[in-house]
Length: 452
Ligand SMILES: *[C@@H]1O[C@H](CO)[C@@H](O)[C@H](O)[C@H]1NC(C)=O
Ligand SMILES: *[C@@H]1O[C@H](CO)[C@@H](O)[C@H](O)[C@H]1NC(C)=O
Ligand SMILES: *[C@@H]1O[C@H](CO)[C@@H](O)[C@H](O)[C@H]1NC(C)=O
Ligand SMILES: *[C@@H]1O[C@H](CO)[C@@H](O)[C@H](O)[C@H]1NC(C)=O
Ligand SMILES: *[C@@H]1O[C@H](CO)[C@@H](O)[C@H](O)[C@H]1NC(C)=O
Ligand SMILES: *[C@@H]1O[C@H](CO)[C@@H](O)[C@H](O)[C@H]1NC(C)=O
Ligand SMILES: *[C@@H]1O[C@H](CO)[C@@H](O)[C@H](O)[C@H]1NC(C)=O
Ligand SMILES: *[C@@H]1O[C@H](CO)[C@@H](O)[C@H](O)[C@H]1NC(C)=O
Ligand SMILES: *[C@@H]1O[C@H](CO)[C@@H](O)[C@H](O)[C@H]1NC(C)=O
Ligand SMILES: *[C@@H]1O[C@H](CO)[C@@H](O)[C@H](O)[C@H]1NC(C)=O
Ligand SMILES: *[C@@H]1O[C@H](CO)[C@@H](O)[C@H](O)[C@H]1NC(C)=O
Image 1: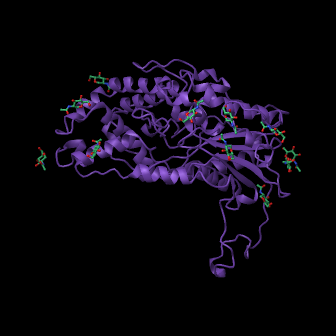
Image 2: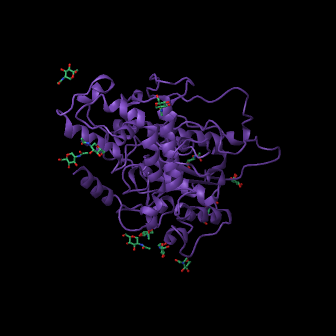
Image 3: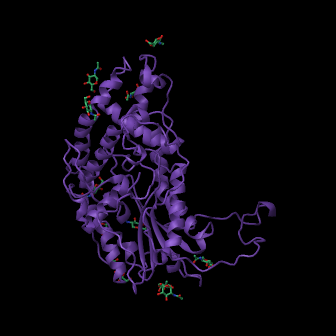
């Protein structure tokens, strides 16, 4: 039932205008003046200073300092075996709440050389932290607990399961996911605000997909970048992302790549499963003993780890987090990394195909031309027209999914992420998903939707 009504509403959301101003203000004639939220109503002085350009003016890095964002989430939970004083919440792969990449992307960073100027930005952002996708293993875990309640008697660390209930939603942004995008928009304004000089009323086009979390992520970002009045500065273009059929959408390239949804591209999910049998063997034995009558399996252990990640971003705290040792959390991150490597990146036969359309769009923008013939993933109706595919902007803002972003990085040929990751042991590696695309669900359990 839950699935069905969700699918219907997702389908309904596909119908509608391509270009929308989502902050439709209530007409002032319909509300009393004291409920009028029009920013032009008795606004007071509104002078603004010059736009910042921190990307260019920042002399950092300074030795020995780092940016520490504040957080509404409870992440101080003691974790067994955490001798490194590490943070397990940064070992949640794509489900980790956003944090700055602690060690770069396999390339060294340098300050801007003297005489160099930044003249443009092409940004591709992931959506924010969200509830599990439909078909996720954690939902099945919730159903199993519900089905078996009364038939098991959990004790010790699992005592809470006697009364625990699955309370997560599906697909849409959680509160901290909205904050992530607002913060990112704010950060990008500091970094690149100078590049936007459309004070003459020209608006830039920003692009996202029709999915609820994709659209809202773009809106929160734009609110952070421009303010709540962002529709004066940007027009949001929503490219159709379907649940059925095959749509052309470079921000959701798997839609138009049927093989990305079949077994040939599930090598990553298979590797995740194989690795889970190894790194979760101890935990499964330990937890199995605490809950007679439940038949606790490796899949249950894996779902319990995912629940720690999901409940943390949805509710601020999760009782599942301290069930596992630090080493088991390192195993979890690795399970996500090999999943992405095999499903979406260099180890996947469809990885590049899914990402190639976006690469072609970036090349077209750099050469200031539109795209007038069918090519992988691109919707030519949109890209053969400067209204929907402008090529003269100094700042391009696009929003996509993590799996799709991973495929785009692959299509660009960032071979530092190409290394084969064995499913039977952890090796040091560059493709660390929590450092690249914080937040969705490793396709460990089901494969119905490969987007995250
Ligand atoms: C829970 O019970 C429902 C209804 O009997 C059944 O359809 C479902 O498969 C069960 N789920 C699990 C995970 O046991
Ligand atoms: C559950 O197990 C504990 C410990 O063995 C026992 O004290 C308790 O009475 C049991 N509860 C139920 C509802 O069976
Ligand atoms: C706007 O910014 C672009 C890119 O920095 C620059 O080329 C252009 O001259 C600027 N236009 C104005 C009116 O400042
Ligand atoms: C946004 O548009 C408004 C109205 O044209 C303008 O006053 C403001 O400077 C613009 N903001 C930016 C950051 O360009
Ligand atoms: C991909 O699958 C969709 C939905 O089943 C189908 O409509 C489409 O024709 C298929 N495309 C190709 C190229 O096989
Ligand atoms: C291309 O985009 C247009 C405008 O949203 C839409 O009507 C059309 O169905 C899309 N075509 C494909 C194949 O995605
Ligand atoms: C599993 O237990 C063995 C024996 O206690 C230990 O050597 C190993 O490190 C444990 N593995 C994990 C992933 O915790
Ligand atoms: C427990 O689960 C495993 C794995 O799903 C299954 O093979 C086994 O038959 C189950 N045992 C019982 C007693 O249900
Ligand atoms: C692209 O646009 C041009 C100019 O409007 C038109 O002549 C051409 O047929 C279009 N190509 C496609 C593939 O839609
Ligand atoms: C969508 O992609 C298919 C396959 O690449 C192509 O044949 C078709 O012309 C494209 N449609 C649009 C509107 O771009
Ligand atoms: C880009 O081109 C469009 C269409 O020619 C024009 O309306 C717009 O002002 C241009 N924008 C910039 C930033 O030059």
